[in-house]
Length: 360
Image (cartoon, rainbow, N blue to C red; front, top):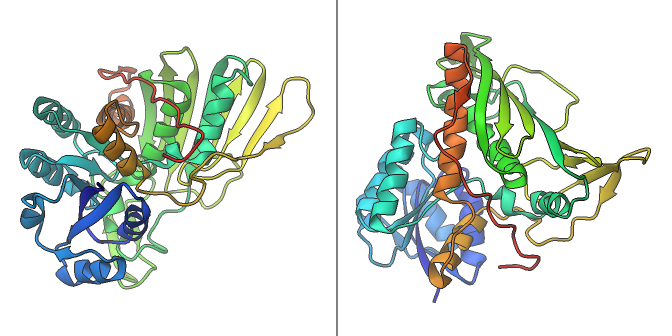
């Protein structure tokens, strides 16, 4: 019996979720809701969803077992809390919530009710990152000692149809893209114990050059360039730079450095490769074949993994503890910059189990 999923929020990202969740044999989208009902109706017609309704109606629908929250970040807390109160499991788009206290409350509420929390990204469950996880677990690069990660661009106002929220409190490059990179690093290297960082908003105002808001100015409320240092429990040291202020660069998405080699990790915003390895004593990078499952865009895989874990027992991988740990790391980077100190993290998390080498 397929697990019933209700989708709240039918914006751009909902398309790939709906496509995949309707393909997986173990999930079925049974209802969709959006503040713009016409948008929900369009998605329902396109992907064969039987019910279009309000959010309240969706939360009270007995056919909905998992609420997939694809609203804007500042709405994640309210939707997740209401879904949990209604007795539903919840899978949020990233980040888990905007506020740190909100995130703790949501995870604690789910635990008190015996419900599951899941959270994007699930790209870390895909073929590319999981190939890297296998190489590290097998000792191919020896003992991991360090990692470097970079997500830098010139911002979203040149292409996104409604980019204003990226520059509001709770936005910025770290909260927007950091979950992909931090979830990948924790998946590969385990939890972080200490964070420090520097942050700034390089420009006070951004001018939108995309449609339909061409020419409008956006006041910047959050840092747009952040450099963060991560001390892992394993002893490895990581560095993550995220920026909306960089025109171009030649730096990798992620590299992991070990005692016996270096590993170039693919873009954590995708599910596929390429993966490159440079072994000690060799003279160049070697491309590693990526043959594990889920190399295509498989957003919704985390929902599937959660549904299967609920049906058969055991933990799911893109879980609330992981999302809360990532949320604390991001807040800690801001706290460290504001207060001029290292931040010892309150949370930790079990490194998620690797994905099996076959499809779920």
